[in-house]
Image (cartoon, rainbow, N blue to C red; front, side, top):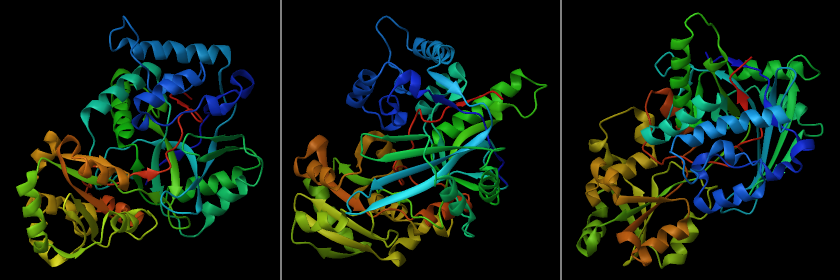
Length: 439
């Protein structure tokens, strides 16, 4: 079972940096070039300088990691970052408008340290997606230079008794220690709860509740696997050290049975089919789907704009320059092509679409790797790509979101999902909580 511990976090001191809104940032993997420039200009101590350091003129590429290490040390010395005096956990609340819907949703979790475990049948930590080598190498160099986690891995767990959400609510009933907004208009609030303080009873309930069953990684697989590599290197260099701080990684724990989490779908754009390939796709779609034409673009957009629809029903939208259709998978037609993995993986819409792309578009795994697919979270952008034939775009497949329970089920069966299957929203901020690899 997972081992979860309280810890002493590094946090920005508002008396030193002023408005915390100006020093936090998103995680590295959602920071585009324009936002990166804006964050650098926002405040001299913006956390983007730790999370995603730029290469400065005259530097070698790896010089940036050493520069970040020096900057981090300077911030600790001058009081920009201060370490909490006693171990605790950090209750974290996010309030946001659901994309494509008209209502607001709130989710709560807690941030603590999770003891790292290698993946495997008996592991207390379960992945659900594959990782890429380039991001892991970048994150490893940064972690090795700084010895801190600047942003949390996100893990999900089921604790249906309700004690977790009740404990979170009890801690969140007082004034927060931090209250900030991000560039997506998400409100983030944070409460520090000391292990030996007035909230100690709730802290214990939360730590115990999340540790009863394996944790499924929802977001941050690259950071988790980087932390494993870092742990192994530290162990090799410190053979006599037991229970090192580097044996742990920063994690945000979200309970899934008493609150609704938001997973955004990632739509697929197919490139390079050509006019003949598009005609073949439309002619052969009935091999796998029940096909229902739509009146036009507006009808197809309306059908997929909300992420509040129940996913996992085998429903897709298809748009080409010849018009649009709604597709409903006939699962018996897919069965002969589903060879690998268990029942949960076979149920996924993204798995069915992977089969359809191969059979109807000729997109094998190597073709996907070669760039024949593009991805977007935006329905409108997916259709715009096709209408403008941008970068050879010929067809867009629209998806519904993957249910959270299905993600956990795939992980529990030891399988991993296709690339770009999940996007948990909103992202946990970088800079609110920093985990130093020290006791």
